[in-house]
Amino acid sequence: MTVYAYVITVQFELRSTLAGPAASQLTVSSNGTITPAPGQTRSDVFRQLFADVTAGRPGEVNPVPLFFSLEPEQLAAFGTELI
Image 1 (tube, rainbow, N blue to C red):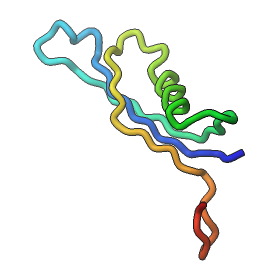
Image 2 (image 1 turned 45 degrees about the vertical axis):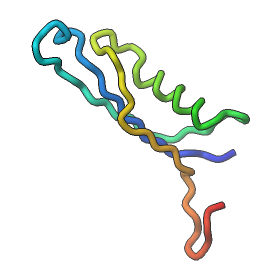
Image 3 (image 1 turned 90 degrees about the vertical axis):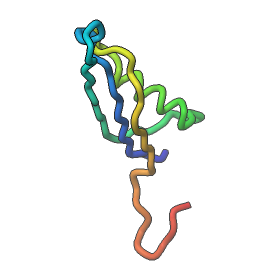
Image 4 (image 1 turned 60 degrees about the vertical axis):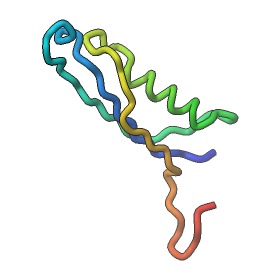
């Protein structure tokens, strides 16, 4: 099974400032590695990671993904190509 490295960045509005004239925002990034289950798609992995990043944040609302990267963790050996 292939291991993938990921980076996901999500921006939230802070609930306490929604009624105010200038909403405050919070940006959160997460990175690591993941081994997708057989048959799992890139979209499935994105939804899983997005759910993980946004879970348990009651004071932060309206999450918006700003960046997502999912790449094979293993680099090609020098002089070879990734397939």
